[in-house]
Length: 172
Image 1: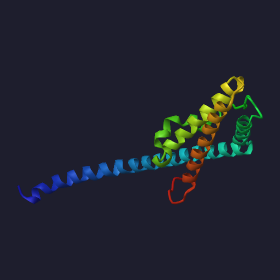
Image 2 (image 1 turned 180 degrees about the vertical axis):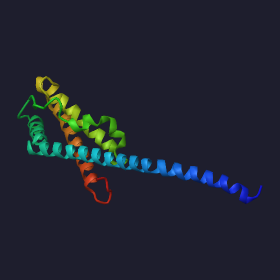
Image 3 (image 1 turned 30 degrees about the horizontal axis):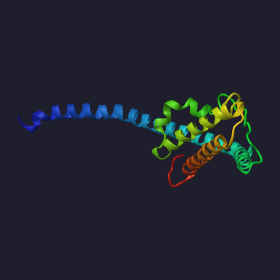
Image 4 (image 1 turned 90 degrees about the vertical axis):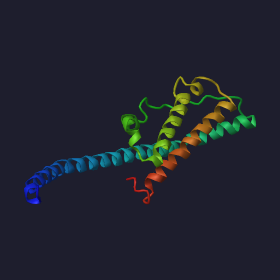
């Protein structure tokens, strides 16, 4: 067979391939753009929730209150205390509503986001009404542990916010 005979066959295959590309490429690109927008939206929402949580912790001076109680326990001014904070059941609605998307977060913050919320949950369990520190008179060991958990949560949360706001990373 010569090239002239095969030309219609080549044209037909070329048309099929071109048609397939023209059909699927726009849908594929649109889906990728949607996924990228979704990742950016989820990342921004979670970073903002962490930022607001840190601002509330600072404004209400929870860590400073724990530090003062810990200092009083260490100096002997106090032999024990309770520590209770009223916290809504759903203190992290954005994170909880996007748990299924945590794996989509940028790798540079993914682990820290999970760590932040786990540390916050641990501290909240202790200070919420009925929790260990809210329901019982606690000593230096319990307050030192709570202080460690709270300061680590603040450190990790600040790191997430710092990375999110870093224009060189382009997470937003």
